[in-house]
Length: 201
Ligand SMILES: Nc1nc2c(ncn2[C@@H]2O[C@H](COP(=O)(O)OP(=O)(O)OP(=O)(O)O)[C@@H](O)[C@H]2O)c(=O)[nH]1
Ligand SMILES: [Mg+2]
Image (tube, rainbow, N blue to C red):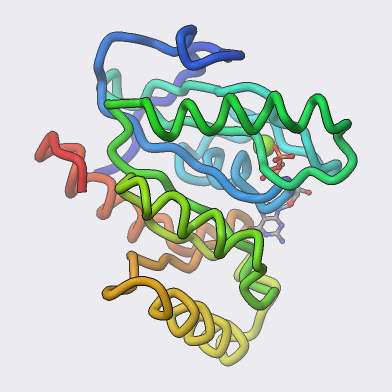
């Protein structure tokens, strides 16, 4: 499935403000600066569609992008943005939590993790929390261009082992790079598999 058309629809502060037309959507989440917005630009082939920044905490709202006039890609704010004030952080967390737990048309939550680092406790805890609530999820390793093929394989294996400590079956794991477009076809094919069937994975 090629993404033929991508357009920004709206930024929402709260779940209630998100589009309510029932279209299927997939969302991207992960720590601040992990590359969520960059991945959306890579997938849609539209530079600057989602705002990218070297400064963590750039995305602060729930951003909806309509794809092929049919379904949504959603860019979420990062969690674990250490520099945000406690009050701001609590607000983000509430927003993200209610979005993840209550968004009925969320077909898959992609949790992004930086391929360069060993799994962080915060990421693993977040992934476990998502799983406990039976939200369909997949893991995306980002910034793979910064690793050699060998390093990437090694880190993938570590991730799989960690995930198998609390999952019977490892969730899908994708290796991506927004600079080299690595993983684009795999992600497109995966998204298509449940969007066209109209069902949550
Ligand atoms: N080399 C490389 N750099 C990347 C990649 N993806 C993102 N970056 C860089 O990482 C930084 C953060 O990217 P964003 O896409 O803004 O990250 P984000 O997760 O949306 O960040 P927040 O909105 O702050 O949570 C930017 O400087 C990007 O250029 C990648 O695949 N490869
Ligand atoms: Mg962002």
